[in-house]
Amino acid sequence: MDNRNLLPLLLSISLSGLTPSAYSGSPSPATPPTLGISADQTTAISNGNRLFVDNQIGKSSCTNYTPESRSCSGGSDTAYNSFDEASRAAHAGDTVYVREGRFKAQLKVRNSGTEGNFVTFRNYQSETVIITGKKLKPAIDLSNREYVVIQGFNVEKVGRWLYFLEAHNNIVRDNHFSQAYDRAGSKSGIFFFHASHNRFINNTLKGNADDALSLVDSERNLVEGNSIRNAHHALWDIRCGNYNVLRNNYFYNERQKGGEVYDCDGQVKTRKYNATRRNLIEANEFDYTANSGNKSPFSGIQYAGQQGIIRHNRFHDTTGPGLRMALYGKEARHNWGNRVYNNLFYASQFAGIWLQRSRKGGQFEDNRFTNNLLSGSRFVNNDSRWAWWNQILKGKPVQLYLDRRDGYRFDHTAIISASGDGPYLAIYGNGNRGPERPQLTITQMNRQDPNFQHGLVIAAPHFIDPANHDYRLRDDSPLIDAGTFLTQTSSAGSGTEMKVKDAAYFYDGFGIPGEQGDQIQLDGDTQSTRIISIDYATNTLRLDHPLSWRKGQGVSLKYNGKAPDIGAYE
Image (cartoon, rainbow, N blue to C red; front, side, top):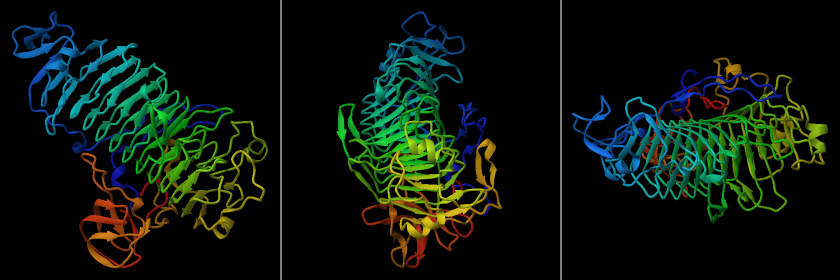
């Protein structure tokens, strides 16, 4: 295969590095990747009136505004000196241009647009518009509005950032949010509640007193191309929400963890259990997470969802595990049916992946891990309360941490070890206590653990430039074509409806505006096709053009060469 050809999901990523980190301190983040978004995901039609907000004019409004001089003289445009008056005047199809300045008032959208005729609020040309004030809770309010675009604002030093409450079909893009001071849990940052079909694209978020972005009881929203840094709790979370997509984002948190996925146990007065299903988390970069001290380690993702897809992500330099498959309490009692494939887990201070169990029970089943790459992790006992961690695991090259022997299946997992196979690359534990039985090598696990198959130990992955976090594979990498196909066809056939053994690996767009389904390819075939829709109940894929297939033929995302690669890139 040609390693310069990446999956379509990753084509827009310009990889950039961070200063390499030692275990003794926090890395200094460089500028995160620039993540381009396709035009059809962000284009909103506004073909109505042009209005202005300019806080330099000396009256509440005028109809003879001249943009060049920023004055109510000699022009023909309508201008207002406050957000509120302009918001009341703007209707479907109108665009409100905000002139450069500092505004200490909330931007509350008063009117909805319609499909094809958005109400747009944006900065004028490349001017800097700042919304600020600690009493703004939130600074921008889209509650109960549809078909609105918010673009090009700087929101800083406020109580809370932005609300999507009962908001649908809106686009928020190219904004900068910093310093939200209110300790309001999920409400303090970008807050989705009972919200659907919204797109949050190409924004930067930095410095939140609680959660930076929360999707609560919301579905079919797209969060793409954003940079989110430093929140006192989680950078993002999905709680009792379904069919949401997080793609091509950059996450870095020197205060706590990366992301969380779990049910609602009282958040925003909502209690829903076994209700966080079919969310897609793909092609993100999970950078540094903070040292937890004598607490449960801070993860890249603390996950307890159902039927989700986690794929093509890069987890690196996390102090806790890259991915923690959690089981605890009421909010995280249902962790099942998930598909975790083609991810990279690199240089954790705990393990790349941690599967937990709970003494209080819970549902942990049918979680499948395929074609993942684990490398460079070494156990550090940041939480020094436990003898097993202090005396046995400290300094060991732990890549995979299993607290259980059921509920999972690992297939074609590649573990990088320059010294070869050994008993601590993957460990069986009992939470923070050691097991009663001896640890196994990867070779022994392949033979003795029916849920761990085709594990590989490779001396070197041959990354292009790991020092600068470019984890693409060189052409001489042993991981090229070393993966397995995700599923197989159920029977021989032809046409545009294909039944497979497991459709849970695939994505059909979830009905989100601008989204398309996966491109898939059969084993031994050079032709690919796109998924239009999926019937998960019957494992049926509906395709955009016909194919022919034999029974048991492998099916994967589009690949190069003879078979899929192992790791985050194809």
